[in-house]
Length: 79
Image (cartoon, rainbow, N blue to C red):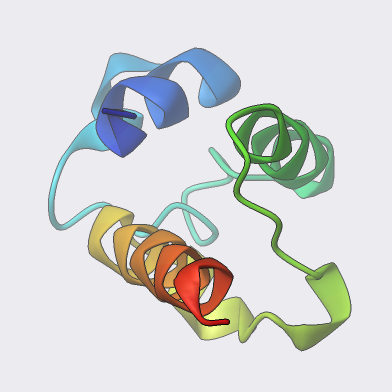
């Protein structure tokens, strides 16, 4: 199973990126290039997020990103 926290640590090149309570955008950890890499890595895992349809607020925290991934997985399983 995909570990979102570890993926964020890799994409942001910072161990604190996977911690609860860190605002990834405000801190500058998840900048525009990191978002692109995050989406690309998720797509490699079969999870497609459409950037124009993602609420930027959900990208602020690990839990928000985990929720986006869970929602994408549920939508993918629908016939």
